Length: 266
Image 1 (cartoon, rainbow, N blue to C red):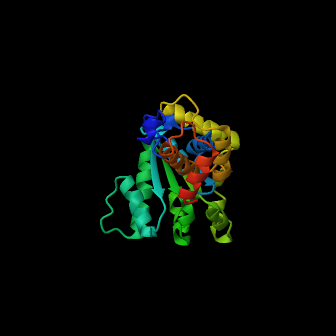
Image 2: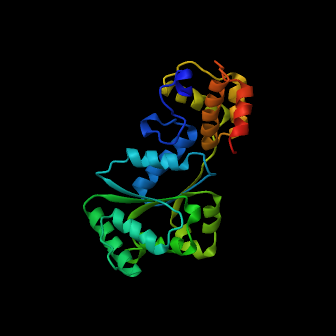
Image 3: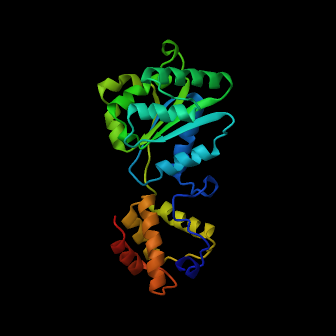
């Protein structure tokens, strides 16, 4: 009901947005261009940024737009996986039957399948999202993904994406073999004040509303609260629409934003 009240035909302030409808912020463009570079050059790319600024969304858009005939993308959101579970996920993504395989057998089978796919002109891109959750053993296990043939060839593009904890962890001497393979590092930034306003305007248009329904003071308040963090911004915008509807406001002003902030856990 609150969507139609403001002339919106759908909710676009959520993360399930297609690549075609993505807001192309400078951050999005910079990360996407570097992902394309990693895809072509191979090696390891490290992407670091705070929670909620669009890392996972950009990875999803990258996966969506990548030619699936030429590339096999293995996306893993790292949670509490054990090394064995990690290998099992990769094996299943490659269509391998893990059966009762031991760890070294799984690694060998994965390497063989990767070589076979590459010989058939299909490259592998391994994406590790929320990589700050990688355990020491899991980080060490990444070596098997690229350490083939006496270390002479990079077979796989690896994208490591997470918060600053993973960057700090990889600085440790025990991971020197991984650091040497990192060919680029990119730090993601939140939206600027102007990008925040443009993001809201773009999302409203895609939702069917060509008029701005937020006052300038409200837009500034939304940026001041969210600091350009897209997740926080989306959450509070949806709440402002609900509160504005309840208050029967045609324009959402700074007071509505303040009231919405009190309802959103930030």
